[in-house]
Length: 307
Image (cartoon, rainbow, N blue to C red; front, top):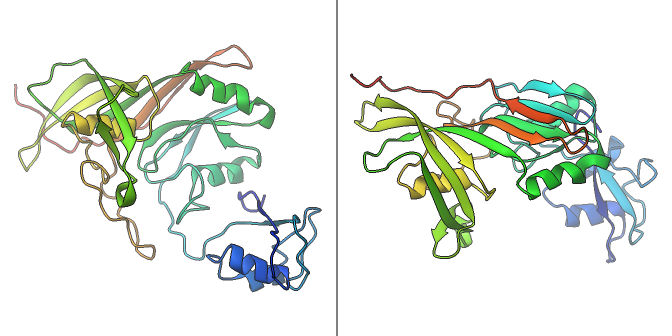
């Protein structure tokens, strides 16, 4: 692990490459600075020794390297550690911070920040949150217990509660149980889940917590509690949108917005109003009832309703 980033590995394939530099340049062309990495001894063999750029390619040999980005935007929000023991770490994730490295983010991810903070190279997330979603997130410390904790999620033995800000509709009666068949769109719209005919695979209870009033555009808003009983991709966002209640600040539903250009500074002014408030489960290792709760709040930037 270097600066919180665990090493990645690639196996040398059979081919006509004259040396390992040529192999890496063809196998991972997105990395522009392979020669400089070799000069800095940042490509290692399976024994952890630096590899020379002109070393011959040996089919099946493992090469280790560290993923980095030349221009990575700084996410100006901090995570908070809520709990830590020998098995689990629970954190309070801010909006805009991805859980794991990917795309334009490596250092600016919860996993890498937490590895740097704790020095624990073995951390893996027990579950995931979207980049735009804030709230409680749990990490597993020891590799030997990963399967047991992932089984908790697989068999739906964890109780999760979310909060959201979304429009108010007079024609809906709460609480309501919404069940849909969600499927990922094909082609360029793959980021969105769509509701199709078929057996329900997404199940959520929606409760009204408070009506929040009307904004300057005349749209009425409300504060909701969302309890998912399944765990589909974008489940809460897609189901609320299907109810005609798209979440405040959502850049994917109902209309997929273009991504921020790689060299541009992201707009942090309007976060998605979705918060993972709590997660509760019986710890499969200690048998202790675990309850982790976010200390964050959502933004209610509307006037209070008149009484």
